[in-house]
Image (cartoon, rainbow, N blue to C red):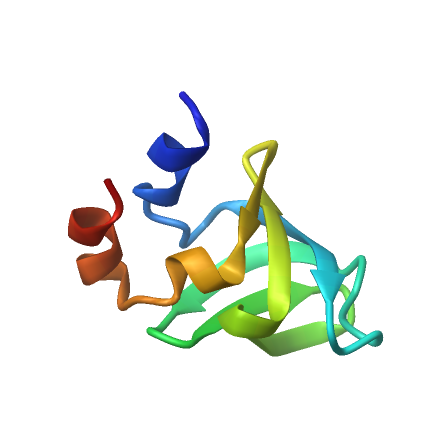
Length: 83
């Protein structure tokens, strides 16, 4: 699988790490994606449940680094729109 293939996957239930973020308190956070909307990822981490705006973060999901701006779609639309 490549990065584009990963971007088409369902993220709920996957482990995620925030690589870069404009909010320094979120950078480096690790957890499991428990929900996803058009603009947000809801992540359950050791610190609790956090909502992270996709457009301000770069995520590491499944070993791939994914820019949140590239996946800023509803999950059902993202699967169709990413080519």
